[in-house]
Image 1 (cartoon, rainbow, N blue to C red):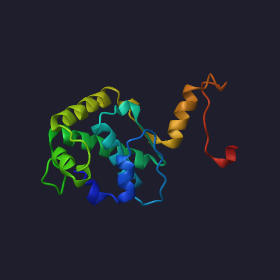
Image 2 (cartoon, rainbow, N blue to C red):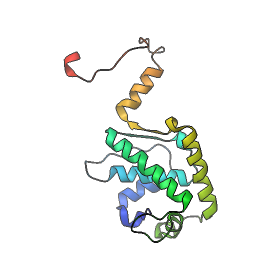
Image 3 (cartoon, one colour):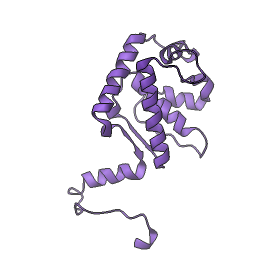
Length: 165
């Protein structure tokens, strides 16, 4: 399970536990951004945020796929009460007994499980509204959806090759 205190440094824990809305995380390669952002989304989902209201954008397709996979795996383990590798506790027990929860309001285990199960059901019904993508594909989606308002032809294309400029 996610042992926040063991797996994240202090700055990463602050990102995960930040109660506010939109959040921008800027960090260098190999700094743990993918893990931190995955845990951030997991935390949002466990506190009742709908997957369709979360946008997770990164620079590479590999990172986007990895984050989506980790989040879905985390949700399934919560719902079906399956411990993570290297852990004897169930995921919910681990969440609710971590030291970072000591000064937080107590969550009822079944309420958290039902919340995550509802969010997982919502995610499955609206899989493509769970926005985990690269920044360029997200911007492309916005531009395509707004082509008419931007006076662009509906079949416009974006080229990243410098020779086409």
